[in-house]
Every structure is written in structure tokens, then in C-alpha cells.
Length: 109
Image (cartoon, rainbow, N blue to C red; front, side, top):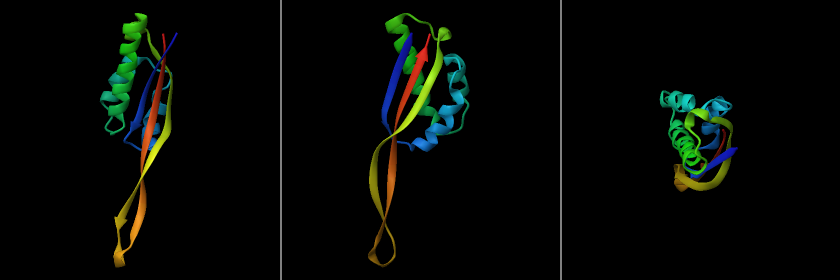
């Protein structure tokens, strides 16, 4: 049985989230949440919330305990890009992009 949870428009670049997401594929949910608690990266907070939400969905909807669940897949896709400008010399501006992410977690139990 597969349980899916999605976080949309997370204000973090997909490249930063993918660094952590690829580490935790095919691992138990309880172990993943414990290990993410000790990771000193900003991307760990949205992943902790999303995996905990998926585990809660599994418990409330399908009566599965978190100890029975494994992370089958985590995908991180690009979301909307906010275009911003920074003032530079001689009254001109340089553009930069604020990237966002869509994170999808699939659990199997």
C-alpha cells in the first residue's frame, strides 16, 4: 500500500533539498525522522514535516503504524520561480531567481 504526501511551493531551491532527499530513499520512516533531526541543513525542516505528515496520513487513514513504513521514493521538482532584481553600479540592476520546490514523499507499508 502506498501513501503519498506533497509539499508545494517550499521556499527553498530544489538543488538544496535533493542533497538530503537522495540520502533517505528506501529507509524506515522512524530512522529517517531520527537522522533528519541531527542534520544541520535548512532543508531538513521541510522534509521532517512532510515525512511526519505522510506517517500521520498512514496512521489515520490506513491504520498503519510508523514502525511498519518505509520511504519508497522522494522526488523534488522545481516550482514557480520568483524573479528579483538587485541594484548595481550606475543605476542598473542585475536579475536573480528565487527558486521554490515541490516535494513528494511516497511511503509503503
